Image (cartoon, rainbow, N blue to C red; front, side, top):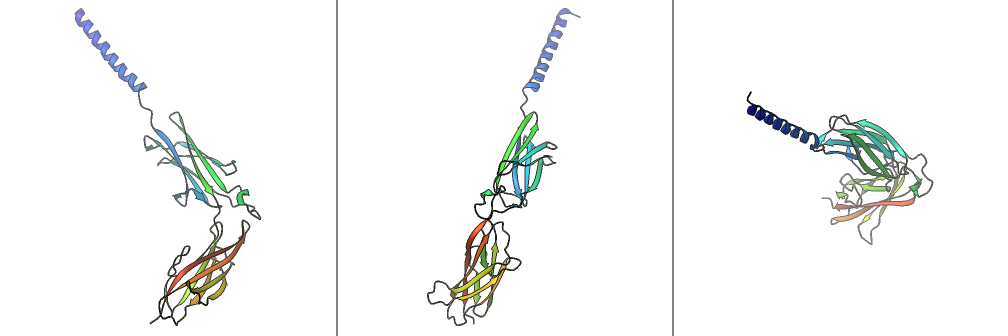
Length: 272
């Protein structure tokens, strides 16, 4: 072979190898690292929540993704700390086909309610913290979410079949010929209804100084509801507003004696 041609072929081969190695080097050392992340949330009854009650079921769920695509089969370590700073739950789970891993647990019912306030002595109440950790592509990822466990303020709610649900909500329109059933429901610090509670009932003309009230009392049944039957005066000549009021004294191991009350406005129209 001609020497010049041989040198030319050798040069072309060297250039080709150099270009190929350069591309390989770029592919090996310049590839962008995947964008991986982990998110974690707390859920109650299938919906995200930041507030729970004692004995509530809690689902802690983590989502692992890479470049916005779910990562399947990755182990996730969960560490749940109670408000007093101790480990309540340490558990692992693998991500499913949606990149989700989860654990569930129930917030304990306080074994010993304090005889008096403050309720801060209960370790279940306060801020809970959840940590989720995973390793992927040589990276360790962390995510944290917090939620609270608190008791509620006891309530009484007075209403009719026509309305009144909620604090001071109108109870509906009626006539003097109707017998109206009025209900009063009591709920405690963990949203349970309270049976066996004495409830006082009063009905009088709204903001009238000469009104003679109808007064009655009853005890809440097994569903925590007391029922009253009301018939408004049949001598009304015009549409009149009546205020119905329910009142109950309430106390429990974590609530000092307090008066619960709720009212609603009833519109009464003359019959005929």
